[in-house]
Length: 411
Image (tube, rainbow, N blue to C red; front, side, top):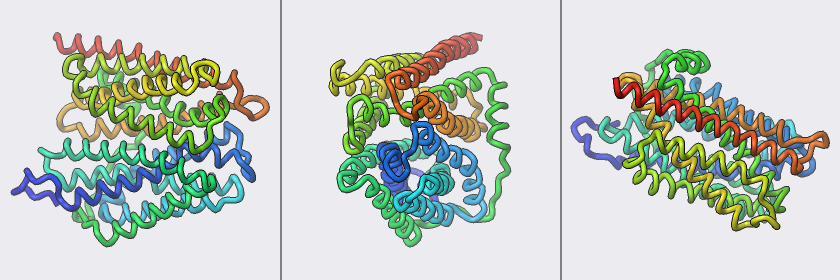
């Protein structure tokens, strides 16, 4: 859809439509995170912390395995039908969870949502289709901003709606996805000529082969460790604040919105200024250190030890650390990759991130659960300190990566 004779034109109608689609989709996704633990642990489900970890994990496992499938189908049949079907599937997944009366149905809803929620790569491909090469980075930047804004509003809306019942946000997310799919069907034009098919290697094989490339392999390893640690926090944070501070679904929704706001400030304001003076390698090290330090402090916090003030401060430090490290690693991965392998390299990094998001909640589910299937001071400490240890290993690996790249540049 990008007009080669008008490559300077950026805000085309298809681009605006797909960004709105992603924004609405991410509002629904963001609504689930602070609500799901409360929903699953109530009657009639009575899920344990371990089972809640599996609920988070299974969604990401489905995304990991089905994102390439949806990508190939979108190459063959077009972006529009795949996006339409996937949004319908997300609506079905949310409805199944909302109407569930057994834990099995909650898991089924997460499986359906994970399979059909693997549409982000298709949306990114659509943006690549409708932007010129000169504007592609700008388009992906807007995609990231849209992603972030949806993730801010989602938890906040979930917090407000949870006052009317913990199941209400799932119905609202389902209606958003359903309305989004209908609007997309009637408004979004196709961006490619269907019928093209690209063969790709197995995602696990690509990940292991990437480790043979010294610079890129180390960067990919650091990114994998960072996302693993971050996904442990994403899963455990709600159960931690509910146990230690007595926070409800509503209060956790606002906390997650706060995390999103801080992340946008860190990535949109601070990162752009600091990367010019410090560089990506140093910012990665600083970011890993801030995240690891935040994980150490979290178990020490409570109503009588810092209260909400220090919880917000530590959470801000953690969010800024992630805002420094995550884009730095993506940029470094792009810089050390040949021009003809940019898409492949970044795709491999995202495959590793998808795998990390599946593994992290499983680790957290084991660590946060005790013999009585409850959260305790001991399980909180070991969960967050394990995540901290992972981050400090990532920091050491990023220091080594910086030295390797410096030595390579000196040759």
